[in-house]
Length: 411
Image (cartoon, rainbow, N blue to C red; front, side, top):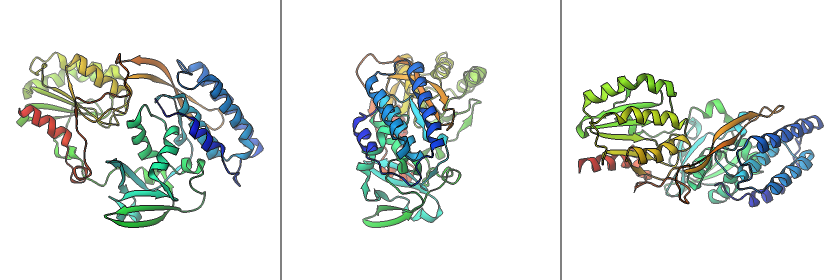
């Protein structure tokens, strides 16, 4: 579940009046959008008030409407993000990026609770590898507490970290929270090998930010990936280990899996693969029915060691359908899970109903189904073998999770 909303509500109510507050016309447009939002959330969510009390939902919206004359557009959006986040599930989301926005030109990733720069635009490439310490004097810990209750796609503490890594770059979000100023550079403090670096950084267009991913080589670069006609799934045949390794990074359509199943079976039979590795790391979801079709295609092959030779790899990005298929593959494929806990909750509100606000055109989603995949109280799918990637491994392009699976096969 997402974080308790009360602390964020207090923070967002202590706003300062902006020079660029909404015009009367803009206030009316947002009022209509908020009313439309309320109706959609109340009528389309399968159980709107599973975490947030109905009276609190109504109170938050009433206060937002009253405050409109004092707010800027980023502040309105931050308030709506906070209210949506308080509903408390990872498929009920306000997508601030559906409107105009900019990003600070850095990409981050946590290693041992240190937030490091893993990519940057050309003027800031000297910061790659540095640990972020503060933004405008606020520590990463303080920023995490302020920002994570608003974030979309959060089911637990693991997905909270991944969303924070990304949304900390979103200038409009920080502006709406009053953490940065409009039309002014922002002060960043970093630590690089014991040295403090201070930078004044301005945001860039999404098109420039989108070019960033990671400046470090990927472990998957070492694999000979084969196109199997299922977009989002690549096959590597590890002949030395007699293993078929599937990098299941994204979901193809159900029809694509069915259409290419026989060709894949023929390919695996020819390779005489005995062990099966399905890698859901980095997979944010799709349709778990597609994943079940994929597993059905594999299950007919008697060549695999179905007792002890199936492995699923997970991390904090494993969400929604990828998390669901992880649970299912553990059950129907007798798979063992290696890696880190999933970002998705196995007992989850899911299947997004998406809608657009009529005036601002901002996009949102609410959950229209509930799936209890595990009949126990848990917030993630926890691996059978916990293996974390260290900062050193990441820099060197090593993959300790896959290495551990291959070592298990060698036994």
